[in-house]
Length: 254
Ligand code: F6R
Image (cartoon, rainbow, N blue to C red; front, side, top):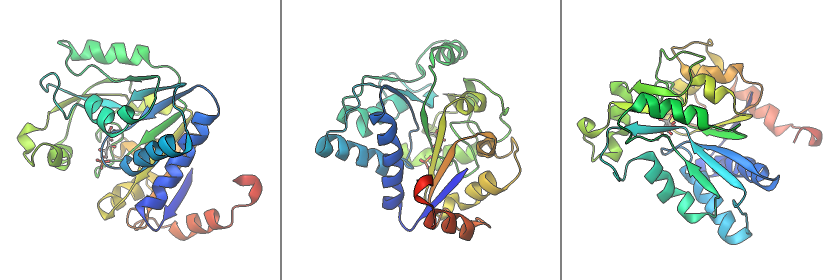
């Protein structure tokens, strides 16, 4: 696991965009996308590189991590809609896929999405303040596949900002890739910023591997990059070591 700590979120976004760019330039790619605030600066940077530097996504297929269930069709907060507005409308991406949050049989839609997933190369992840990844809330099976989950009150409160600050408008159910599904991606790239993520980041990176902190499954994966700003890294006991490792990286390790 590589932990990269940057002074600002903008610097971290450059690193996330660099990892994605490398994957995209190396040939046809399957990219796993997280929605939410954490990757937004990196997405804007990818859009800039597409417009100004000719970075093409024409050989890239994207798969979303998760989707709300129970919103009216076409609702602007469906993750499929958000990712379209924030990223894919501005790129030449070949295809974008998401679980079907409008399906009358959500468990069947979840199973169909799991079956449809190809082998993901780089999977971008955020982390919830309670340690969730995707929408795998604390207590999720460490080997779970894509399925319907219930959101915790904490996550619904955190996401109320996208629903006019009204927690009652935030759906209770979601379809999310499971922790086992996420673990099959080739490279997990988690980004977090801000003090409110510091405890979850510390639990995920330095705590025990436990379903109580679903993001701790990253410790089980052979290729993980965690990109943080100083605030999100502020509760890491080994922060000095991570900084020194990054600062003194030999050329052959870059
Ligand atoms: C979204 C997702 C979630 C978010 C997490 C953090 O697709 O999978 O795990 O990454 O809730 O959300 P933000 O980035 O809005 O703080």
